[in-house]
Length: 236
Figure 1 (cartoon, rainbow, N blue to C red):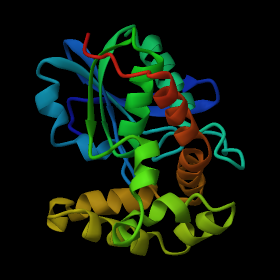
Figure 2: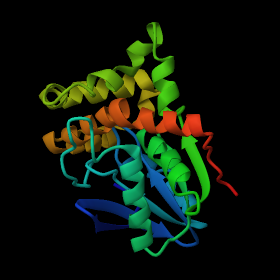
Figure 3: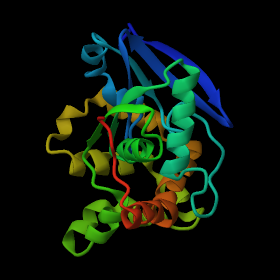
């Protein structure tokens, strides 16, 4: 369903096989999706961006058409530091030593970690719909926390959350799209069907590892940056 002008390719980085959509010409721009989406979430904006950029839109490791090893009990392999490092290698393999990155939701957490850990690689950074992971955990209290159920539910020890996601993925997706969007109809039926097709037991494993990593690993990385005064320097 992605625009016809884009090519679909696969690239192997370490043990992760990335599905990547590539199109356009110009300065490289990496687009990173969130949960429970895939690269498809960019299909309406990617053509406009491709008029002036070489657009690279992968499925995050383990999501959608990208296959990756299972995470460790604390989400090892899916920390945003590890995911960012793999995507930097992916961009290098595509011939892009420096690039801009736009991330939404989970992808935005990968994007800002990328900018912190690889500042010489990032020319511009845009993060959509997030605050840093450590601040997210600090703010989740009282009534608002009900809307952030994935943060604690999906971080539970395996295999409970994986089984819950796989038991009725349509119900999970419908709840997310209908309660997280101010206009649920903006997520068209064809996209919903594609996201449902991508929600398999394999991707459920990766999604839970992603959230597990945020609980056990990512916020510690953020806390260390806060303590050391490290800040994002892009754009230079």
